[in-house]
Length: 267
Image 1 (cartoon, rainbow, N blue to C red):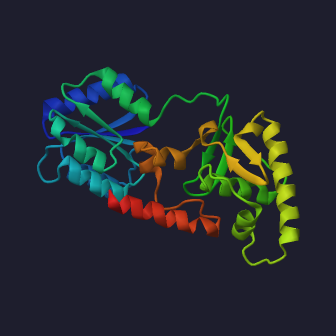
Image 2 (cartoon, one colour):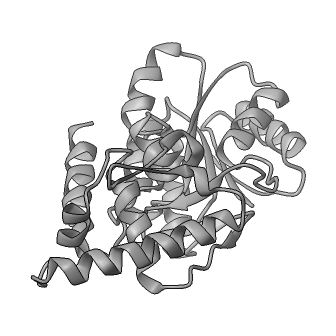
C-alpha cells in the first residue's frame, strides 16, 4: 500500500508519518511538505497513492484544492483530511473525502480511517458482492459467480438496476431484446434465464435474494452487498469508487449512468 503524508509543518509531518507507520507498518509512506510536491510526484514519477493523508491549511495548494487535483490526476486515490479545525468537515464531505482526522493525531484514529477505506478481507458468508461500477460482475466468496447462460447475468444486472422494484416480463424483454417483437419467444427465453439464475443461486444457498410473485421478479436489496446501493445510501467510499462507468457492457444501463453523473455534478 502506497500512502502519501502531506503537511507543511515539519513536526506535524513527522507525527503524521509516525502515526501512519504504527497503524500500517507494511505501507510505503512518502512524505511531502507541500501539496504541489505530491502532485509533482503523481505527474512526474507516475506514483498512484492508495491513500493520501493531508493537512488542509497549507501554502501554494491547500488540502481542499489538492483533493480537486487528485480527482483529476489520480482518481482512485482515497483522501483523508488531517486538521485541527472541525469547521472544514462540510467541505471534506462535499469533495467526497474518504475520511477526516482531527489533530492531535492518534495511531488508533489513523488505523480506523485505513480500515474504513480498506476493511480487513474476510470471506463472504451470507451475501453476494455485486459490482456495478465499470463492468457488471457478481462475486461469491471473492470468486466470480458463473451462470449457465450468458444472459442470465444480464437479467440479474437489470434486476439490480431496478433497485428492488418488481419487473414484468415485458419490461425485461424491452431491456434485453429491444429490437425483437416476438413476445411469446422472449417470455420463453426469460423463463429459461430465470431457471438458470435460480439454479445457480440455489447452489450457493442464495436463491432467496430473488422474489418471484404474480409473474414479476425483484431483487432483495438488503440481501446483497452492492457498490451502487452503497452509493445510493450515502457511502462516501462507494461514491469515490464511481468513475463515470456503470454496467458499461449493457446499453440499457446508460440511463442510470447519466443519472449518476448528474448526481455527482450536483454535489
